[in-house]
Image 1: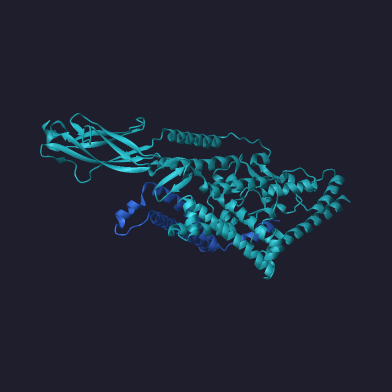
Image 2: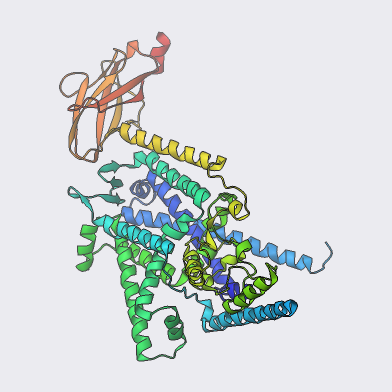
Length: 101
Length: 495
């Protein structure tokens, strides 16, 4: 009976796509929150003045760069976590296949 | 005879089950890449969801167009770093309110999840609501569930091309409008839309319209329930907020099982009558699989509470209709608690509800009090960075400061600066000694250079001083900020 409920949907996305979504989406949410908190305290205009005063950034550009940098960082952390978990699972599988501990 | 009947019934039930699962599995073969075609259904929970969706969509699409006076009522003006919320004006210095609102949102989620499960997922989550809206467009252009399945199976034809094009067109228009509305919360929409029509919009505005529009199109049009199943973190930590008294959508196993399709159920009833309540009788579930067909995440609620269940209540509505049709009592699938299903009493007031509720009330009260006590005036005192002090020709010690005065109100104000300090220290005023008057435009910050003189012989190395600033027209709007007055060390040694 369970067959018709789960099987048709179980293979909806490939494991790679699932992993990628699980990396990108939560890191997107956290980056959004972090951007909000960060720029509540820091004015991108002042960041511009202390970093590259010769180039003029608009605040919108500052917010956007900030968001994508944070997203890159959070996604990188999520990716590494996913990678480590993947390796661990592999090792467990190898161990359980009978190699002595 | 009874034994034979029971046997016949069992084998019929088994055959029935095989047929049922085959039917659905054949359907699943049509479904390339396991696309879910939720069946449309009407019922009380669906009506609630439709109302919730309309209210939320109206809020989202109309809110940016609502004006209060000449200003957009809700505008998070990022370029100017000011938030306008229904006549209130927030500055970066008001971050505490943003933090408070985030806390309120978090605790509301905890509170309502503990109380009634995934209300958020079923009724309010943008992912669910936009998926429903995109599904509605799909229904209008491609037809109902069966028609959609057929259409996807059918080879390309003019009709298929027309329907698919119409669907894509309606999706893209809605997604683009969603992106524009989203950006309209951050950039005045009454300027944004005309600028877009004149092909004159800013690059970043265009970028974010595209980004948000594309995310809506992909998430609501294609990813749909996959977001809830594989991407949403909330689904994973909800169990921390659930307990045995939380309202969940549950299938009454003791009433429904053993399940069996309609025909066999009649046989079973006959057997039951003959048997005077034999244990071979079937339960109320006729195994029509309607609850599975309507499920937007494609689960079988009869397997018990699952992480994939977004608590939308479609299966309740579907099952109730079937129960009404076959003449069984409604509520085989219903909102209930683990305790209630197990026949134990449910409690609504329990420690986690009280704690979440109390925290929520406390933060809300603090926020309200903070808003009432909020003054439309902000003062920051910055000391001159280059020198602690200067000694003038006559031996007077001079300290320089910059006062940053922010006027949050909607009109220009004149502020009076006075110095509260020992007698030897005085503020250099423009007119009368000891005070300084400055005009600050509406919703602006004015940097005011301030010079303070001190009589060195009467002062220590550092003296605490305070700058008091008040609104000349409304003296109750006042702030006092502390700073230091520095003098040469040797003078302090002498005294």
